[in-house]
Amino acid sequence: MLKTPLHQFHLDYHAKMVDFAGWEMPMMYTGIHDEHVQVRTSGGVFDVSHMGRVKFQGRHARKLLERLCSRRITDMQAGQCRYSLVCNERGGVRDDVLVYRFDEDDFLVVVNASNREKLLGHFEQVRAADDLKVKIEDQTVGTAMIAVQGPKVMDLVSKFSKEIPSLKRYRFAIKNLLVMKIVVSRTGYTGEDGIEAILPASAVNMAIKLILKDVDMTAAQALIKPAGLGARDTLRMEAAMPLYGHELGEDINALACGVDFAITLDKHNQERGERFIGQDALEKTAAEGGPARRLFGVALEGKRTARQGNPILVGGAPVGVVTSGCLSPTLGHAIAMGFIDAGRVEPGSSVELDTGRGTLPGRVVPMPFYKAPKP
Image 1 (cartoon, rainbow, N blue to C red):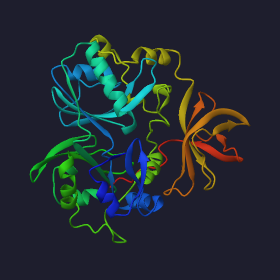
Image 2: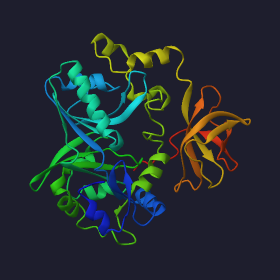
Image 3: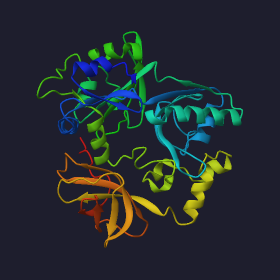
Image 4: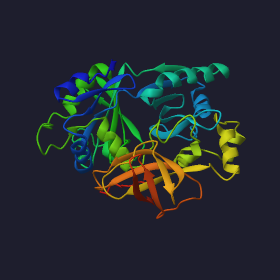
């Protein structure tokens, strides 16, 4: 298995390590529930170095990304991040990505670990087919990426930077810390405020000690504590953020996933001749009234959880399937997301989830399940 530059950090804090997409990653340290609550109430630090980081540079970089990404790239400003999808020709989702624009011809794309190799091949194939002048460089192994998330994180960040707390969401800045440059963005995957930072792999252990030098992460009431993949999943579920292999996939129509904001189906890119892969299929889906199924949230009664693949029933008849489910530590009851036949339910509708060991009663609710209080 691949190891991130923070592997020893995880061992030092007694993490339970697991294989995730070929990387040895921390599933949890003290427990998923405790780490979840820590992030919601104060702050947690995640190692997300397993995520792929791919650089696009050259005079056709923007043009290539307009072809690859479902969301407009041309109107991005330097210092801006933009969430997008990479679709296949059928309108399914190859991956969801985060695009960073540094300047006119300089971009970074963050992809999911499980899709990195697949996407690298896809990126090169599209570049070659259109004979575009772009250098595509996989920087994953040479860099590290950490996320620090939670309502008290900006109090910590403000001690070493006045600029970062003033950034708008989905903006980034380049900071110098001793001899290294760190790309710090106001992004995250938890529904909380916070930052994500990309920096040289060789310097990440020194950087994390500098950033957290006044934080005792072993203290019971520590401002920041390590958090693993388990809490990352329950946090993203409460925030109703889709996950590849669950709410997103090659055979799942991009318009069904609840992220329509990340899909540009307008006249501007058509007039400019900039059509992304999959756009024809998605326009056809939209013209026909939308996808056959859409993503909905379900609040369950009690703490028993549904799992991916469990059927969703209305009046005893199957109308959909669960994509993700967990016990929400914040809400105190189980929640689930799933695809349900269009027109069969609306917020407030009663449903049942068939676990194979009986059914769980629930009701359809708006997503996200949880929104962080505004400061």
